Length: 103
Image 1 (cartoon, rainbow, N blue to C red):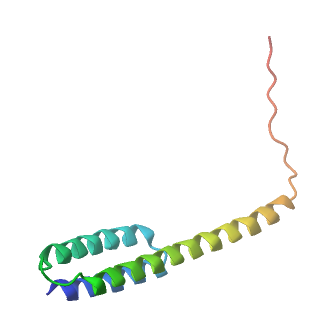
Image 2: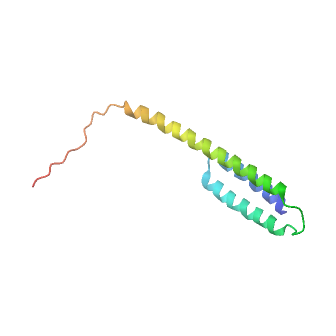
Image 3: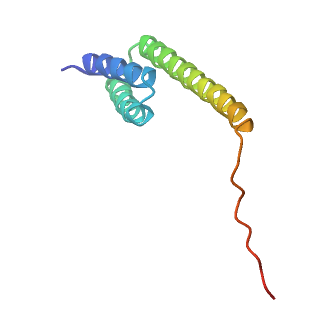
C-alpha cells in the first residue's frame, strides 16, 4: 500500500474511533496518522511546492477531532449534571456510622 492510501485508511479509522468515543483506540490511530504524515513530509521533494493539500487534510482532521472531543465532554458534563440533580433528591434512610472516640 502507498503512504497516501495508508493515510486515508488511518484517517477513516481515526474518525470511526472518535465518533464511537473509543478514545484509547483514537490515540493509537492518531499516532499512526502522525507517523504517516511525518513520512510523507520527509519524502517530499525539497524543490517541490509545499505540501498544502497534506497540511489542509491534517488541519481539517485535527479540527474535527477537537470538535468531537469537546462535544463528547459537553454531553458527559450534561449527564453528570442530570445525575447530580437526581441524587440530590434521593432519600437517605440510613445514617452514616458514627464512631465514638474514647480518651
